[in-house]
Image (tube, rainbow, N blue to C red; front, side, top):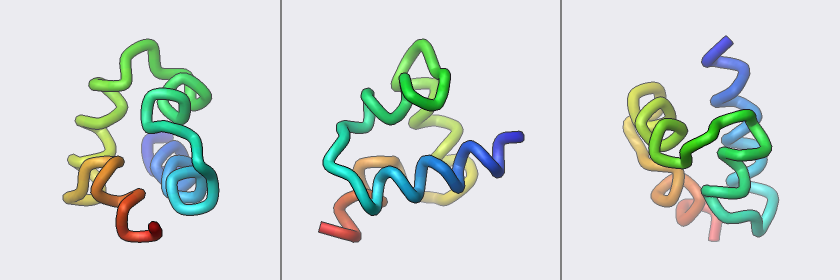
Length: 55
C-alpha cells in the first residue's frame, strides 16, 4: 500500500505545482509531516527535495 502511495506522490511531485501539503491531503494524509516521514523512509529524500529535482 505504501509503495503505491509513494508512486502516486512521486508522479504528483514531479508533474504538478501542488504543494507538498496539498499532495499529502490528496493522498489521504491528515498531516503533511506524516506523509513527509513516510516518503523520506521510502526514498531517502523529503518530498520537497524530490520536487526540487524536477524544477
